[in-house]
Image (cartoon, rainbow, N blue to C red; front, top):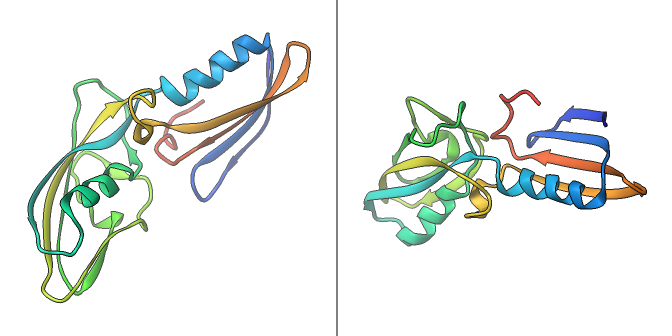
Length: 167
C-alpha cells in the first residue's frame, strides 16, 4: 500500500513524501532502484575545439558533465548534442548551451568565466545512463525512515531533469 503525503515543486525540482507498507528490505530495494537504476541524460562526450581560457579542458568537461539535462523519453541510443561558444570578457552559463533536441534543467549554472579575448568553442553529447555507473546520471535523492514494523516514510527529491515525467 502506498499513501502520498505531499508533493511540491521546489526551486531545484520536485519533492515527494509518501508512506509505504512493506518490509524494510523491500523499502531499501526501492530506494536503491530510485537512485541507481532510473535512466537520465548527462553530458558524457565533450569535444573541445578551442579553449584559450585559464580553465583546463578536463575541469571544463567535468563541469559540463554535472549539469542536469532534460530529455524525454530516455531512449538507449538517443543523443542530445549541445554547443557552447563564447568570447570574453563574459561568463558562460548553462543557458548558453544550445541544442536542437534537448535542454538544460537550470539556466543559471555558471560554467566558465572568460577573460579579455579568451575563447571557448565546445560541442558535447548527452547520453542516457544510470546512477549506478556515475553520480551525474543519478535522478534523485531518496531516503526513508521506519515508522512501524513494515511501514516506512519516504522522502524523494528530484534534481530538475525529471520535471516533465508523471509519477
